[in-house]
Image 1 (cartoon, rainbow, N blue to C red):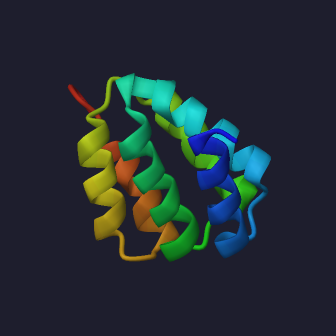
Image 2 (cartoon, one colour):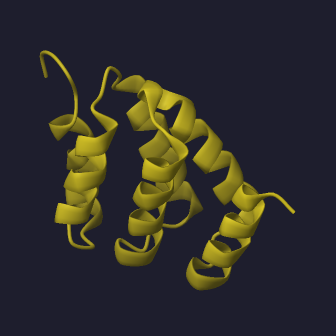
Length: 102
């Protein structure tokens, strides 16, 4: 079993979002805006465990990230952590992390 699949299954058991969706969300977020898997995992974990995002919320978040490139993915991670579990602030993190004119 791949490391990503193990990660997705473990997180799925903690947050209730399907592991197949989590694996695809990780792949998509990792590919968006030149992100990396480690940072993307941290963002998804924070969104699901602290912000209690469900699959629909995550889908919207990742879609918004994809539309907002270029973006500083490390800053996105930090801004999501600063949201301290508040979904609305997590979505604002996307705007705060854009590179260039906002």
